[in-house]
Image 1 (tube, rainbow, N blue to C red):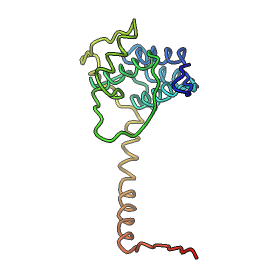
Image 2 (image 1 turned 120 degrees about the vertical axis):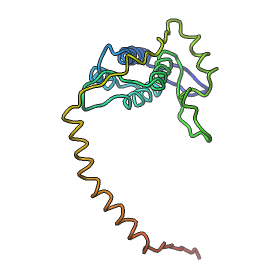
Image 3 (image 1 turned 120 degrees about the horizontal axis):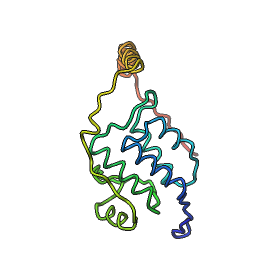
Image 4 (image 1 turned 90 degrees about the vertical axis):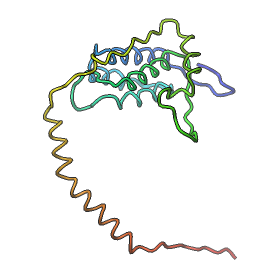
Length: 182
């Protein structure tokens, strides 16, 4: 645990290491998405950074069909930045920041911050991105066709209701309730 100005922040080193190791195995195609999912969603922790990282990882794989990682270079680099965070003793505080976010260094604020944390972790090694490894064509499954069918079948209904909503909003007048005090 770290004590930051009267705030006690829990760092779950054991579970951070588990998630970082399995994420690295997923990135290097040593395990599939179901194996990663089984591990990361069994973890319960009060570590805010760990929970945030798990939510971020979840968007990089499909829950319905089994597959290995197929990542762009940007996704590969982002997941390695998550591994760096997980292997560090950093904490996270979510806040709203005005201005654009630099996705090439997100969730960090600067490259200097990345290098500073990187120097503190002894055995961190990021392997170079190999685009040939991730150029995988997978066979379409029943669920791929099923989802496309559902989307195409119900798209006209969704458009109809959206147009209906727009039509009725043209005749709707804003109402204001005024309350006066004596």
